[in-house]
Length: 155
Image (cartoon, rainbow, N blue to C red):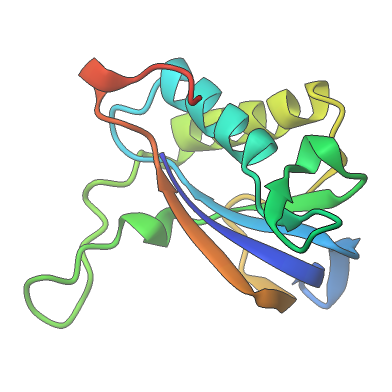
């Protein structure tokens, strides 16, 4: 799994002119599911997102996680994170998981984050979405679940 995690002051997702998610300070997560991703990748990514110390403490140091704060997150499915543009001019998405199993993993990731007590907004899987955000910092972190042999919960 791959994720682009952005600390935001606010974010929203609109589909067909209708706002489907909106939040104030928190994280906007673009989440991509790749071929071969498993429940172990999902567990690793969920824990990493929930516990990533990306918010400032009273001393101004990035020391607090979503679970340490009352902030929210929006998770948007993003198969284009698996786009490979090393050859030619059109990206190949051959490494992205097929839509049906990818949707199931995406939805389970969102539910697992909710089960940790987090408020989770979403986009609509497979829809043409308009994502708006005000990046805070800016702080943007790229995450990728470890290779299968090395997959274990993050520290």
